[in-house]
Length: 252
Image (tube, rainbow, N blue to C red):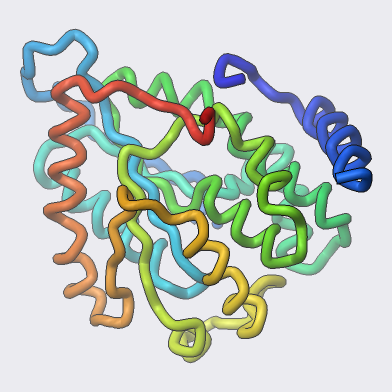
């Protein structure tokens, strides 16, 4: 499945089939890259790192993505900052309308749209990584699964359309109690920014986490959160330059 390029129509067909079976069972994409050569590693398969930031709404992912971008740029690494959903694509515009409460969609449909939004960027993502550019990604498949599961959808159904996407080399989870996140400015501006719902999302994130995740204390001041992350991210980038192979999500 990792070799597939999903179109929206295929996703909606997938959704129709899977739902039938289961009943019997924004920063918009904004890239900043620096044209510098990768450090010489002697490895023909040297590549960029796929670094994902996850966490509840208002946990600080966007702010920390920008800080990490600046940090790696300052060290001379080619790096870009991505964000899902990418609201600039055709699918992304539909998602944006939904998130800002301008449209209504069935929960299964919006889940498949979120997943399709990642699939439509998959080929470019792989090309960027193989060219030596690291990607700092604000939200990825884990958000899609956690949020949809919190709405009552089956977690395995939610994971299914994500299978075969590129697996992150590093997931940093910005850990903050939902009550603390709710106290931050701008909370409540979008559909999912509701305290009880965010509490449920946190539980599903916990189910999705594994020992490779790095837990970051997001209650600290911005500068302290950044310091927690810098060394972890740099180690990941260096590891990928040395030829760490790309892997894929949830194939086993």
